[in-house]
Picture 1 (cartoon, rainbow, N blue to C red):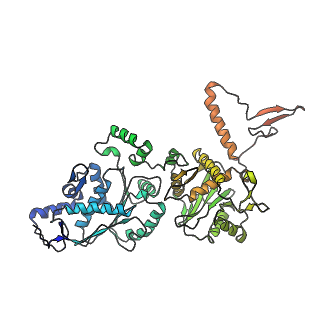
Picture 2: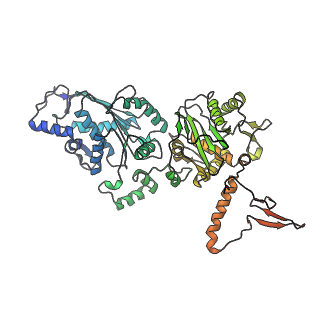
Picture 3: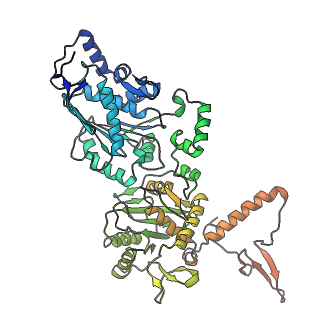
Length: 557
């Protein structure tokens, strides 16, 4: 029977440090079994709270045993799991095993919220309290945010941030629901924590989450599947949980939605609801590794002599999570292709024009279109007046006609780029949706795809989901608006609207084929004979072509 001197702060379930314990032979044998096998330890000594039955032994499912074995055998683990599969309890049981049976180890439990991390630590502490005294290590410190054992092992709970583990050395870092960490925080976190991970030869990282769009978690998972990183991927299907069958699936969908079920239980990397780009299209997008990367600039195709390029620029407003960005498009042939992109949330507006200038110049003196809201006007001015970059696209205000692109205008209503108005954004978003969904623009960059998965409808417009970015996506919106401009046709000898119209018209004609050709009065090559007997041909826009065929750059047979 423990005395008041043997228990920690009046808690009879906790043994304080330096308490003498008399081990039996059976205790010693069990201790060694548990040390060698974390699954055995969890099955025989971990207790959890059940909603229906209170405190009960942890009866592990086969997939949970597999997870624990992977944690024990490998340094880096990434797990894609449905909701309500006991993923947190499984990880907590392994962390407790690691802390008890290893001396002087540091463990970090990190979640998207500090309160969530503390809750996970609370589950670990509950399991610890219900261990037999002979298996416990004496308690040095015990609170809601951390605990320390007399064997020197420490466990902390905190939110996932760049400062969470900075300055410390950790043996295990557990990242719970990592897909729900905003992209900019995730990037800062790994930039900060990587030295901590790489400083030891046995440091473990356990990343567990339900998918939440094609974000950083998606990238780590996808790279793990391709063998591009050191993470061991483990996927759990909802049907592996006992009691979940077709009837359960139907009931769950009826109480939620099919879209929600696909994300939370099928673990599909779908984008958010109400995305500009259709989820089916987003799901089919696959990113590629850049051929060159300097931390901010990703290059997918090097400049080629004789090809035409356009650069669209979105300038940061000075908020830390807001990025200055630009995207380089190859518009030589159809479909268009993104060949490079840049994003940086630390570059100063005075320096950003030099980066744009160097990249645009390298890509055959590409045309540049800058969004000139806020400090964007300053960036464009430096680029044009100080750096004397001639291929800066200017925009004129033409009353009801709105903003018109040109290489240069005179008059007081001319500006050094495009102002992102409601009209510009609406047209740009509409054109971008068509370009992507009809395979008229190819995208290879992970960050762009990621932003599109969270570029959602809000009221009458589209913008980034809370906690996400849309700087690169807005570069695409600017480009899509530019494509519809008459000046773009003059630069490229291409008319996207005509192309889209022709393809849609052909599709309608094919659909009508079983019923015979239906004349709608808008034949592509209608002939008109004037009073002098001359034959004229008109296209669908009504332009007289004098019988000459119009040739566009996608007709390169």
